[in-house]
Every structure is written in structure tokens, then in C-alpha cells.
Image (cartoon, rainbow, N blue to C red):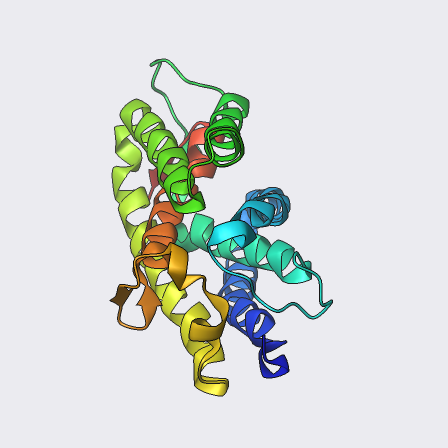
Length: 226
């Protein structure tokens, strides 16, 4: 790939990071769960990238390696911003949830999404897009079927995540036109777009937002309050 795109992935990631920094400083009460989720998904971003570079995209990294620091930073910034967007934008707080309904522990949610994603892609050799849809879809359904009060949170977080997609794709493409064409493996994708975003990525951002958005409230058994 052209060396002019060596910093494009990093630029898109840092553009998303602006929102993470803003949320972190305006809501001191959310910093602990924000940092925890960010680190977890930062690690997840690195691990999942080994799957995505097989058939989805192959971005240049500042280290010149197939998987780079950008993968951790993107997972870190994206997840933290999306997880807190609902509370920050609507000025919501949270308190312990009083429902006595059955609760599936977070560890099992994490295990479920990992087994479905990596199992589908590496064992059953499904495309990384199909593996993503299956993994996110099952976990979103599981969380929202157990906590229907988080549906609004999931919906707004999904919308915010698609807005972040515009930022992530738009900033590098504006600076170095052609980044998307040079980076994505369109021979394995549909070739369809939502504006300038590959439709598979648009769906990835939307589903990731719906999954991550309500996650810390589900995990910590919190409910939203004004």
C-alpha cells in the first residue's frame, strides 16, 4: 500500500479519541467504568484484528506491522466514548437496578461473543463480517432481552457509533483521498456504501454501539436515572 496512508488509521483513531477525552473530563463520575471498558476493548481490538486483516481490510500502521498500536487505541477510544455517550449527551446518572430478574454474568457475555466470533471465523471459516454479525447479534439480543430498560440506551449508542464512523472514515479520507479504496478488501465485501463508508463497516459500527452502549449498566446492574 502507498506510504502516504501510513498515518491514516492513526488519524481516524485520534479523531474518535477527541470524543473520549471530552467525555472523560466532563463526567468525572463515569471515569472508572469508562477506563475499565476502554482497556478491555483495547485488548479486544488487538485480538480481533488478527481476524479482520484476513478478509476485511489491511491498514498501514505506524509500526509497519499487520497489527499495530492503532488497533488498541481504536478499541480503547471507540468503546469508552460509545459506552458513555448516552449518559453524557442526555445528562443521565445511574443507580443500582432493583429488578430480581435472571442476570447472566458479564464473564459469560464476554465468553459468548469471543467464542462465536473467533469460532465462526477460525473454526468454521466464515467471513469476518458474518462472524461479527453473529457475535454482536446474539449478545445484543441476550442483553436487551434481559434488560429491556436499556433498549433506548442501546439505540442512541448505536446512532452515536455511526456518527463516529463518519469521523473515523472522513478525517483520513479528507486528508489523504483514496485511503478507503487502498485499504479495504473489496473483493471480499459487497462494494456497497453508506455515503463514503463501506456498508459492512457501517453495520459494524451500528452493532458495536448497540452492544457496548448499555454494557456497563448491564454488567454493574445499574439503571438510568435523571
